Image 1 (cartoon, rainbow, N blue to C red):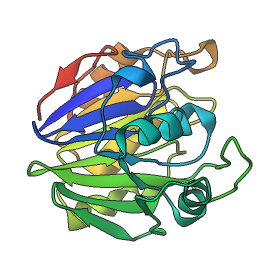
Image 2 (cartoon, one colour):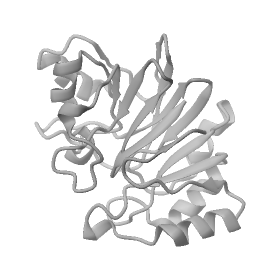
Image 3 (cartoon, helix red, strand yellow):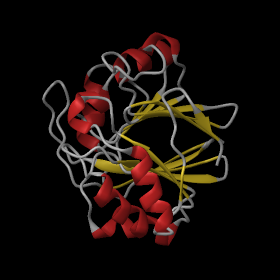
Image 4 (cartoon, rainbow, N blue to C red):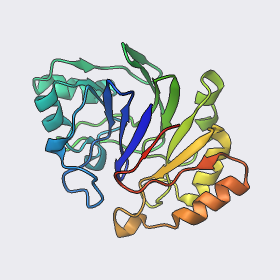
Length: 225
């Protein structure tokens, strides 16, 4: 299974046959690795509704016919817009596919779609190709980050570190201690001035704490756990 960083908090997961996009904010993303019209997707998973995460969901889904997974309020907005392959779990719910599964878990943040639909934000625990990936979404530090790993060993955590809109790199170190992932990929940093941070200092702090191996990906780079 391969993880490709598409910039900001957007990722592509692939097992060689299936491509899953998470939070495909590409148009308007100065760090985007690819244009929205050039990506393929069998499924699109959303952590929440803010435009730097919801992004190009609708245009990509119309073109590809991708399955859509989002918390129920966002999912129903998508269904009302005419999308048919929509799954609407709520917090704690799991959706199973032939390629694996995704479960929605808590995140501490806010959420409203570009069309004005309010909902709770989520993290995503995704199992694909025998690996379990925890995308934290946008979140502050909170102690229940320890819980997903009690059910499924986390191979890779995708962790926001930029501060201002999410936890900063210092709180993100504490998050990594709670999560207990084997590897950590930082995201949601250096896209805009307000989320600029020192990713190499974050890497050094996490690894000094024994909280996982930090894999720093430039936009467009891939990692195989």
